[in-house]
Image 1: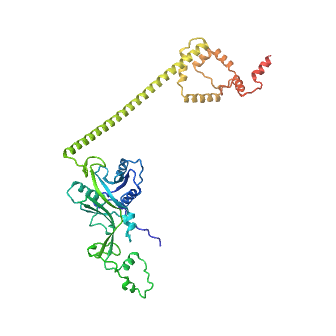
Image 2: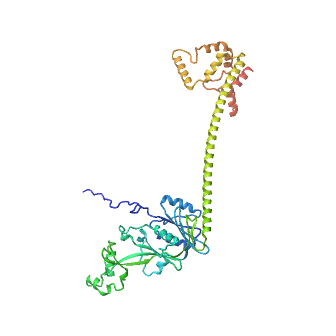
Image 3: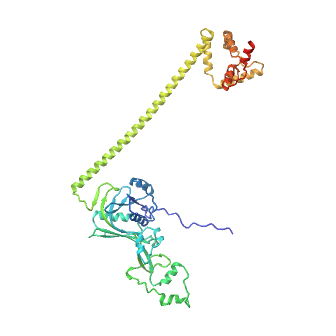
Length: 475
């Protein structure tokens, strides 16, 4: 029987929410040089923001904030968490990319995740809880003040929004709690892992169901002793009735729907105590909406806004001027290039015409020197005709010469009127030129006796040449 193909049960789900909104993503970066403890706090914050953050984001010393913003836009990153350090304190800036606003928090004190786990006797966190986003719980941030409203909205939007009707209980494994104290104006930042334990079930049975391992039954006479023996009851677990909930859906194999379960929180860190210092309109720039230590009158605020608007208008004007100058220079460069090409082409045409005139003048001068008479119009016409010939004409003439040899004619002979006229007109000069160049081969130019003598002298040959033999014979 042929094996059946495996059917795909899981489908690729787009990274979007049920309502069509995009899932918020974040970058956790640093500005300036950080001490080792703050560097570890930055790593813990990246782990807290999982899975919608860059855990292994590489930073360089020469990277600017604009570099991260330019990369964040195509990747769909919506928030930036910036950790910085000064001589007085450490700061955390939470900004919305790419246009702001920006909230600046002063970090009064913090504890790393490793320190919190080290202080616990039974750490209850596992690595699988970071596969889903944490829940957000805000306490004390429901004030009517503008800066507190912005803080609440910022932390609500930095994590994905959940739908109570469609959310899976198994995905709710972490929670981030922000508690604002109105007296001290400090925000307590905590990170917990959420665990559910069914009520009325002994610890041994719960571990057996969860781990699916065969228990150690040595020393027992019957399996029932494993359940009914008093020593194996859940006496150490005191369930708090206020921390129990009735599940509406199945969470796992132990916690089923319509059953009572106890909710427990285990802190996994990091832990921070924050103070809101400043709120800016833009991304680490722009007008200041709120400042904890600097207070300004409405007139001063209005004057500052006018100055910011003037600087922004001036910046846009300069940018427009720069773009217009660049376009103007490019057009001028293109026109100059066209003019240079046209001038080069015209000079080439003029040089070609002058060269043809010089060729005609040289041929006419040669005729005067050799014949001693002025050239006729037919001779000049023949010169221009040979200059205007194409390579194909030479091939056709060679073919005609071969055909003449086959028919009994001598190759190279012409029957035109101009050639006969030339033969009768200056045959003496042509015969004298042939006698002078008697040793020149018609196939290979430059093969005269004088050339051979010169070549032998260059090579250092001392043997007798044909010219020397003739001189000895005459002597």
